Length: 271
Length: 230
Image 1 (spheres, chains in turn yellow, cyan):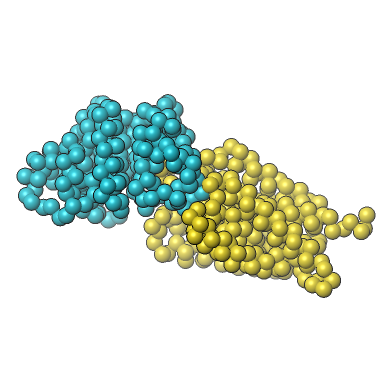
Image 2: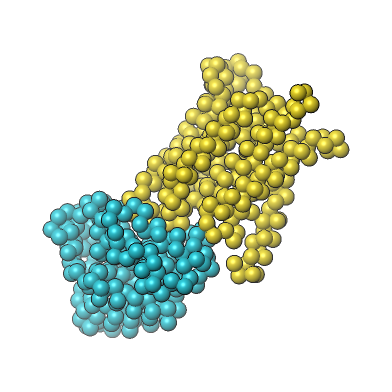
């Protein structure tokens, strides 16, 4: 059994590798990928508090990430022609929550491996981590099953969606909640800082030429699976022997030229 | 059908609309003309219930037009700039979105709407593979499948070439002939203005209201070029 120790981390890498790009594609077409970055940094205070209160750190992270996103939305206008101050609001909340998390660790007298939280520790994955990722994947798939066309409408024409009577605020809140779940579930695999790469790069690869959001998400998920699974396997090779999380982050960056080349090629081919 | 009385709408520190009043008759094609910043989009959004009036009333067949009633009776085709044209979606799927929140059928189903705007052959194309004029017609088709009797079209002819503009005006005329009521905003006016039954000239206040010749006479020769729908 000891020889199969790599199965659990690989399974987690694969689940996160499919989950993050799907959520990232959904956020990207809503022009809300910044939200993933914000949430990923805003989970830290919740993690610290949850550890101090001896409750599930994942729950604390989700609530904290959600609070950060809601706070940022409260102070930004979030309109298409939003004033430039919106970026400053988002980054201020991001830095504020990250700083609060770092401060809470000594103030509450808890022991947290900050490096593992920020950059992941896939080799230390435990069954609850895999379970959490599967729950997050299930939540995302359920949201898509129930509200796929709503998110398509909201992505292609937010004003039209609002005027057609779609519950825009509720849809955005649900998406924020699923984003927080996704980020927290990917924490062990790639860490809260690197998760944004796994959400963004495969989405950029999957979107060009896709004729539906579903197709774009599927393509992004395949790219994410290859990046995450491949990154994990590569990291374990004796000649490489590097931490999987940061390596997956670097591989995500390597996907960018490929995504740009693909977009150019499709443009030349007229589709 | 629709009556607007003394409508004022505040945006920021000032009034974007001030004491605007007019009425629309069923089965009419009306142009809402004015320069940039005249309040045309604000008026359309106020009619749709997305903006609260600071003063005045909007009545639909004698009843106050609530947002719920507006969703049943009005459909808005937004400006080009509001649409994410790179979104991964086919023309058919886009048009079908018009039925998403509808509680009763519109004047056309998806296939009939595509036929009506001349896009049936392109239904399975991606939105970003269409020309600007075809994209506008796809949006118009989506508006048609909504269960509305009054269509509010916000600058549908912006940034499209003259032949496409003429075709779009023809489609709008056929919709009027089919009994729908259309209020179409534009920031330019020229010879195409004659395609409309009636013209409202707006610049925060309503400056003129009448048939195209009446409006031209009222405002003098203010033609600024041969642009767009109106």
